[in-house]
Amino acid sequence: LPTRRVLMEGPIEKKGRAPVGVKGRKPKRILVTGGAGFVGSHLVDRLMERGDSVIVVDNFFTGRKENVLHHMGNPNFELIRHDVVEPILLEVDQIYHLACPASPVHYKFNPVKTIISFIVHDGLDCLKLESLIPMWFLEHKTNVVGTLNMLGLAKRVGARFLLTSTSEVYGDPLQHPQSETYWGNVNPIGVRSCYDEGKRTAETLAMDYHRGAGIEVRIARIFNTYGPRMCIDDGRVVSNFVAQALRKEPLTVYGDGKQTRSFQYVSDLVEGLMRLMEGDHVGPFNLGNPGEFTMLELAQVVQETIDPNAKIEFRPNTEDDPHKRKPDISKAKELLGWQPSVSLRDGLPLMVSDFRQRLFADAKLNAG
Ligand code: NAD
Ligand code: UDP
Ligand code: UDP
Image (cartoon, rainbow, N blue to C red; front, side, top):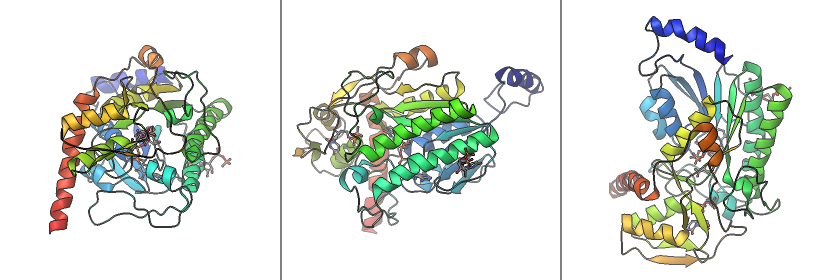
């Protein structure tokens, strides 16, 4: 199939019909589930820039229309409000499957009686705790039924399918750094398992469709990622610290703050996802920045970037919190020619200016 495409593209390019900026490439029809979310919307920007036709399917559970508003009216762009747990019929060449209610506020702290509703007044926060939808149920349903539906779609139309899995499949890892050959250390009955096990099941489904139905599958295991457009109050550590420092609140460090994570800037991730999709390897591939920080070190970087006088407040840690996390990215380096290029100290200010703008708009709104 790739050979046929190359042959087909040659004459098109000679006739000058290739889209602007995409020499020698036939535009593709691409579905991005979860495309109104943080990572998805940055991916959509790159795909649109490349001249592809993009369909976003999102139920706006944690995503926001604002994230893709700048593409509205472009004939190459379509936004469909739809829950991937329900079947859908579309004709596409590639599927980036990102849809997932990935908010630690909910799956860690509100395992059963969590309520989700959209905060309309400022458009800042994506979720609010006040209803009765069990979060673990939504996690699992989306990861399992949603992934199954998207694989079914890929099978019907012969599309290539990329799953955004997570470093959480490694659980509280006993191997450090984690390479893709490590099978993980996940508690199957813990508070985080709806997410960890949901993604592990999604990986299994993807591989079963690959082996059993010949679907072209790609699997990315994404490590902690930050950047503009993150939900301000989604409870993830970088968004918490940045919002807290800007609001002049103390930075909440959970546990002793010595646990580590590796933080990747969103543009590096998007580049990795696109290389994975276009490349010849199924994966799984770790996509993350190997720079490892304790939460106290992260708090210090946030202080240096935003407010050296920001206070730190210790809070109890959540159950089953992984002690360490750092990707071994040798496989992605070798087979995808990919490695991150934005350090935490360079990426953080870009996220801070986005958060500052949104928080400032919020303050003005409330004052009004
Ligand atoms: P996000 O919450 O901003 O984006 C997820 C999107 O999926 C949202 O727009 C949400 O509305 C949508 N969605 C959720 N359930 C849906 C459903 N049932 N049907 C349709 N749409 C639905 O999160 P993100 O950080 O952009 O994450 C994107 C993907 O990357 C997720 O699959 C996540 O598990 C994975 N990931 C992210 C990180 C990270 O640090 N950001 C790390 C590991 C893995
Ligand atoms: N599916 C979908 N869109 C499609 C094709 C399939 O949403 O274009 C869903 C379908 O409803 C089913 C799932 O994907 O629930 C798996 O489809 P598959 O054909 O693999 O399994 P089957 O329908 O035979 O159980
Ligand atoms: N964390 C913290 N303060 C916060 C939020 C999170 O110290 O306000 C810690 C959390 O306990 C974990 C780490 O930061 O050890 C990363 O948490 P996050 O939810 O961002 O990602 P994940 O645990 O999924 O890697």
